[in-house]
Image 1 (tube, rainbow, N blue to C red):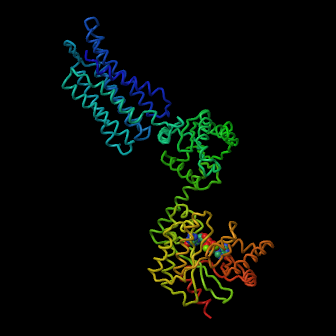
Image 2 (spheres, rainbow, N blue to C red):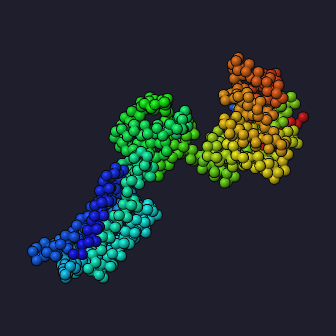
Length: 633
Ligand code: C2E
Ligand code: MG
Ligand code: MG
């Protein structure tokens, strides 16, 4: 009997199904379709074998039964083609569209099956070789080949929207099947088509559906790739659910010794394994993600998890001191905040990295509010980039008054973005975003270059200006290339470096301080001087003034204002001024708004005054006009 191939195919699929069933699956639509394709394929192979047996024993069986069985087998071949097609389109577009398409093809498949049953089938039986032929077989070929071609056209047309692995797997399967059909068409005794279907299932299993490939080896939870498929599946189904991410990244659990991390992760894995009503994912080295169907389930789990994490870990281990863990949580109480899977995955990525930058925030909720803020931030980012492209970044100047000479000897250059409608965006709205994204490097360079152009064009020294102060962001100071870049710009415009004073603020990390110092030394050797900006804003450290090669210290507006309002602050500012001047440095008071304030600070001996009392930051032309009038005498 020529049933060896079919038997082989049957055994292969049964084995695959056996392994498949032993593993937990994510619960995706494609998984259900894969199982369905495998079952149809088993049915097809069983019917194939049975038809050969029936034909062999046809002398003992009613003819109608034998022919019906053969036709059933033929119909199941078309059914397998249908299963392949439905599997192929599973992730290429939304479920609604897929359903409509699949329904149409389902009706066509059913119609072909009816035709197969209506048409006659001929039986060939010669020695050990049996096969069927005739009109019913031709209808089967036409039906199956049409489905194969439909699938291939589909993967070609929708290919870019398909998972490339799925596209490749489906195409390979269809190719094998088509080849088998051609061989069997010209050599009817070789019953290859059923076996080719089995090979298709093998390909799908190894390329796409092996549950093992969705699992994290260490924990047995689903992995990050499975999470992406899961989210896409949820959004395609319009059934979105919610999720909770628990991260033990070191920024949040800094007192953990590295050698204990593995034990802790094992203990946490064990604990998370017991959380009910959830799908568990291990999405990063120290990150777990739990997905829930409802918000209530998530909140219940969040309480259980929160309570457990307040206790200590590694309790039962010998010679190990128990530790407390402070994970950070990312909550998505309602996935409706995003319109698509891609959007949601983008939010998770963004808020995750955001939380790493802010170790003090332990719980971040991705909800309408936070998403609106993120969108605003994205819009601002676009605004900055566009403004830079379209040259709408401007520099305003705020005059600085020298109490000794009673002249405006300097100015602070302050960046502005001009909107297309002519209105101005203040730096408070875009500098933090530019810093967060690194755009500040290019923006800072642009400001610096504009100041150089201004100096070249107006030669403000003729009006009594001695230097211009320009802000440097901490992020800029972290770049090793800063000094080189700025000196090149000064060279290009032939600016006297003594005319440039760069304002720095205190940077927290030692690492950035080293780069900052290198940059400062190079620029100081070149002739540039430095100010320490924002002194007194809460993070000030007197040592910083001693350590850093700055010429000027600028009192923050809050510190200046406090001087007039609060006795204690008054003594602090007086003492700080004495100390700074004792070190041979100059002092600027920012935020001076009234004549009375000016007088008091002059009496105190502050060297320079900057504030609205004299002028707000103004455009370059107005600044020159200001100088012409005020520094006239
Ligand atoms: P800052 O460097 O401390 O600049 C002083 C800020 O105080 C300016 O705000 C100025 O307009 C404001 N100010 C000065 N006098 C008074 C006053 O009497 N009353 C009040 N209420 N405010 C006064 P602005 O221009 O909005 O800049 C805000 C901050 O943005 C700056 O603070 C600086 O940190 C940053 N910034 C501005 N331009 C740049 C730039 O080109 N690069 C970088 N990295 N940061 C910049
Ligand atoms: Mg400043
Ligand atoms: Mg300041």
